[in-house]
Length: 256
Image 1: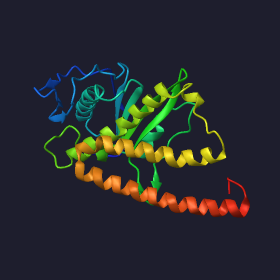
Image 2 (image 1 turned 120 degrees about the vertical axis):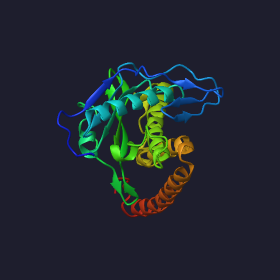
Image 3 (image 1 turned 135 degrees about the vertical axis):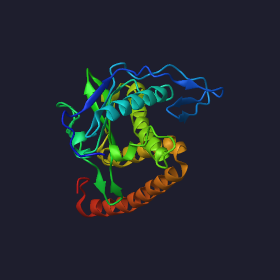
Image 4 (image 1 turned 90 degrees about the vertical axis):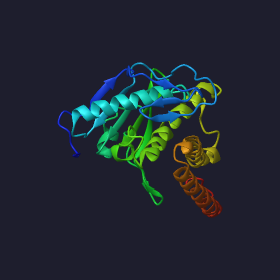
């Protein structure tokens, strides 16, 4: 049904879908069978009108277009709960490396590469970029992780939804940071060498914890598993700190 390359490239779907969104009495949002719980009256949609979905490597163009419409509809609903006002695009592709490379970060930030380390292989990412002195985000996901996003009866639907929400929480958190940091995001610079070494450790851990905790409701069992993995990462950091302290005592240099 699928192949790695689709002649014609991506299928952009600009602007919001006109598909009707249904609300039940509990104020839950439902899109294509997916229910998003909200404890309060939903706020206005924050998704920009020019945000688009790009589906790459999908063999059937009609299926890809339908999928992109479902994705944008779901994103609109989630934008009532999350601040997605600085989301430029959502790229979903079967060739994850190619999908990442398709995001044009211009000269602001180097092109992203798939995450790969001792804990696993990454398949989804929120990529920041600077436009008109503001930080925007692009979400890129390997299609295999979310292809059941619009199939609520499929056994992998909850995992697909959790993956999708997880990446959108990254977008929300970055927007919250840029709106609230004293002096603006450009003022967020390390205070000293210690801070410069701590930030690359602390910031990703905090970001992943936030995204995983806020998306765990979609697939609680998997959410707990990933939080346990994050806990392992934090424990490993303790060992890395001890090693760094020893190196500093030997060399007296924070960069060694």
